[in-house]
Image (cartoon, rainbow, N blue to C red; front, side, top):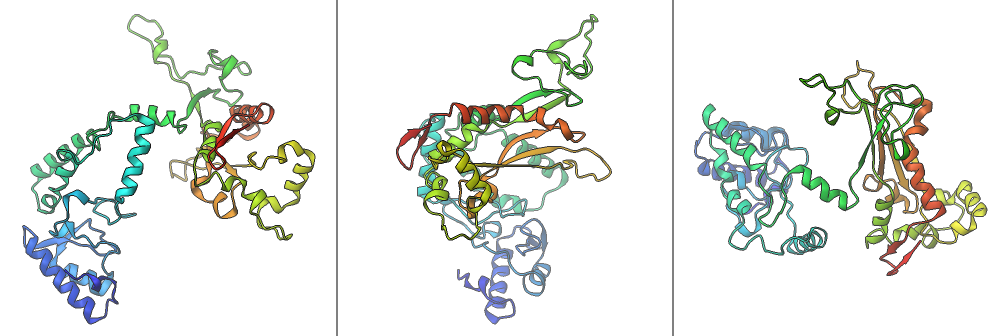
Length: 390
């Protein structure tokens, strides 16, 4: 079926005739013959409307959703080996159009096999359970009564615990987090004093009370039936979440996409006196002059630190303030270092109040890592040069 009309102007004859053909096709494949899923830019495949209402949305009001070229929610059949169920950004539900290519799928399997040592079995051998269930997507188009909808919702909750692929070893969130930590993407929980006087870390890890204000680091004790305190169930009042920095810096040099960019400030930067990057500033040059050994290797990482408080609960009447601490790798060129994928969340300082002048207590783990990098250094493999450096 010709779908070129979808890119035409809404007032053109081609677009109007294309919408008519689409509606006839969708209604003919609808079980109710009355309502169909509306693919306009506002409804985004989330609501069922009558044919005339969909017509008004597609032509008079909003237009058809960009990228919805596989009409799987309106009865179009697609190759079961290339089933695509990506989510349209901001839609919340429904199909999208972008699917991984076979090459991308192969790279993803190779990466997962290297990291998790998964069985290298094809998801298409014998038919994947996910693929088989995908063929029933059109069944969700029909209207259902309350009992039927409740049953489908319960089935959806059960399906959420099933592995995404046949060769997935672990499906629960706890085990997935453990593997994420092995990739250097995990974090550590560090108890903190309720008043922010200290954190219970390293030598003070096993203390039960703050050495400054003598307040307990635990919430109210849980008393058992025999009157004893159940220490195994005690929870700290405040928890600092610390994301170790060193593994993430090492990953920048083990990726082909970023390893060469980490030396951009020394090898590829235009040096014409124009301020385009922190490396063009006087502070950078002054630091290089005072620390020539550090400046001699362009792979040594320069970091910027920023932090500010925000209310995670979205309630302006609440005074809760949580402080994320962000790091920015300034080795990267300006079109990368200030982009969201390269921001590094170093820690989350808990509320409910601002850390104020005591923020240095929470920064101890980060400062410890930076001291280790500055004094000793950490052996790191640079994939762009195929060798290690410190």
